[in-house]
Length: 260
Image (cartoon, rainbow, N blue to C red; front, side, top):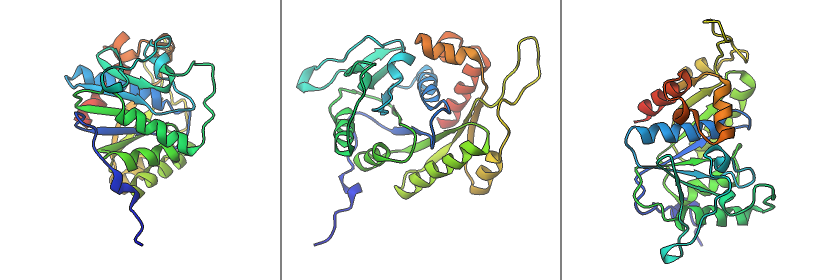
């Protein structure tokens, strides 16, 4: 008997024109911060945008968007109703489980959760659904690629080679599941101390630029480090919303423009 291709079960989400994955090979590079601010930047350009927090074990979307105490409800046809904030439609396991409770699930439960978030949410009409993935190259990434046609993936990195090592793995994973990589966002690229105009490298500059050029991949943009970016995430008001004229918000706007 011929084996079934696991990607044969791909089906688009009704009403959702494109699905974009935001990934990283390792944690701590600011992937969720990039995903949230990028979703807002795209929405400010007139797109109807949804943001799915697919990090089942460590969801951060509720805190980053100021929706921490809110819960989702069932609506028509027993579909979960996404929350709406800053013009985005939002969904996260954090709206179903209290923040302090650990989600202790094996692979099959993760597959089931992803299927529910993709198929059993009333996303409505969206130009773009951004999926904020957990770090690594595991069950959630594979489940997404198998269940829906992903238009493209973005990888998030910091400048140093220790982060590049893991970005290479993430990009290799997308190649294996036939998802095009649209480019890399370099986060925390540089910092300008108060009272100065000189850029300071927080991390040693690695070989990311050369590696991308050798492979014909685009660097979508460089996001500078600024305490306001982290504070915005903690306060639930992302910097694209709280300070749209800042260099950090402008960087996200430029990345959104390149994606468009």
